[in-house]
Figure 1 (cartoon, rainbow, N blue to C red):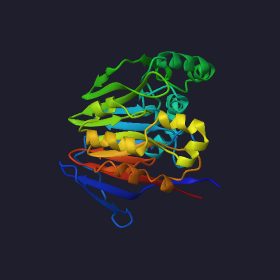
Figure 2: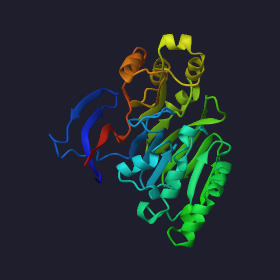
Figure 3: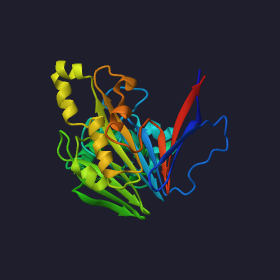
Figure 4: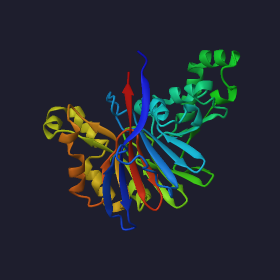
Length: 333
């Protein structure tokens, strides 16, 4: 039987912040208050499309973050299922033509062909402008190779008039640290971070005096502190493993060394003092459960500010205050 998707805000977590960063959390349910509205004064909107890692999960898709500022829709990384998550928030893949990549690991890239090519179809946006991608050295070559890999598909669709040819074109940029994009009042700054692939980048996005920093995959890094000081929203990766597993499994120690533990992230937050910090790219090694990982407790042992564990389809509206909402979808027969 055909499934029907119903999109509802099942719960809204409002974080009303003062200029001092004091947190006043409340949970409101749509059934109790159907007139719940967003932050009308928001200048930026951030959606965590995927908060997972290379590990397979139906709850946490691959890492991907959408930032909407004015007329701009900017996507950062395109992990597994990113196009599906876009569909769930009523954004067509064809509306996305600007993608920024933190590094060239597959879990941050595997959703690119889906967003790029599905977005060319009439039913999913009929993209009429080039698909433009910024990322580390190798990004330009990767996009050229993807065009070669999908050439039969693209040629057939163009020949039959299914797509606008320009929408299937790609433009790849190999970036260096610094300002990599500036248009319509939106500025994107790339900075180097520490991972096991070189180069790897984090990003700072500025718009109308508001700011968001995305750490990318990294161990504890001074550049995140430099570019993250005083931001409205700091989106940071995190990793956790049982101490006994670290003793038994050597590979786990290497993996932990190229990521950031909750205590290390807490130190970053303590030095940057964002209005709100949120975890994404949540890596739990072994069969460690999220409750057992105690991410918030461990973070707050060294950080006294506002931090939450992100979920897929969590959105943040950034104005004078930062408002967080959790969007969930229900499927019925």
